[in-house]
Image (cartoon, rainbow, N blue to C red; front, side, top):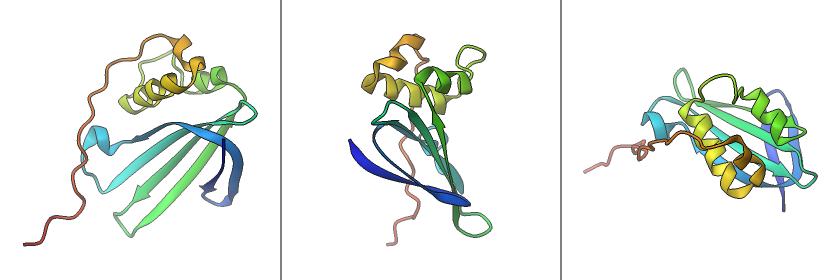
Length: 128
């Protein structure tokens, strides 16, 4: 386990000992966009889960908005994501698929839909 630090918009950084279970960049699904979301799932040393998100905004000036939500258990996280109540977005399904490889708590929710990932498009065109 490593000491991790997550920035949070308008709040002090969240510092904890833990490991990264999954990380998904929504550009893998949508291709290049001016604004994009990176979502990361962590497991803490004491068994909690942290869902971090970084919303990158390049339209109207470049800035990032970071948030982190802490869950006492994997079940609490799954209930927050409403896994049993509605279809998951591609981003959520991929995040949970990756997490299920690292943490058996996520293998209990059954198979996740197959997700097609796109190769991210370069942000800057080549100069000749």
